[in-house]
Image (tube, rainbow, N blue to C red; front, side, top):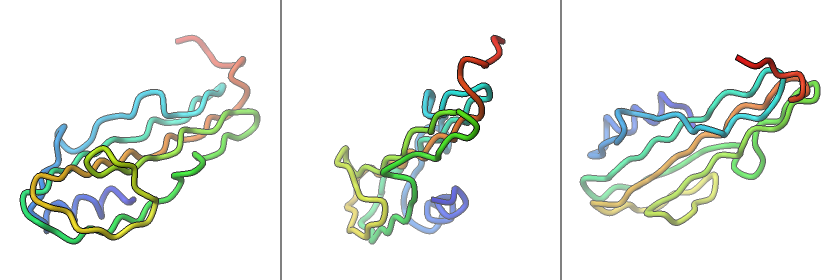
Length: 117
């Protein structure tokens, strides 16, 4: 899901976003000579009842790696700890928590060629 769309969603609905907007999803990027980037975790708590539609991608398989790099981790959507499909519309109640974990990026190049920093 587009981070801008999530932000607009939070601004229009009575919901708060924990962790100051987003935190890195460490370990979600694929291994490679150039590792894939980390996904993000956003957690929303609803302050009132709301109709919610989640439209996301890469929930079954993460972004592929290139030139021998490994794929990133797929994303995850959860409402109150219960996994949600990539695309879903549901009714949230006050106090419900929606967690969106975006996928990690795919790595580039063989992991054995990664530079030590």
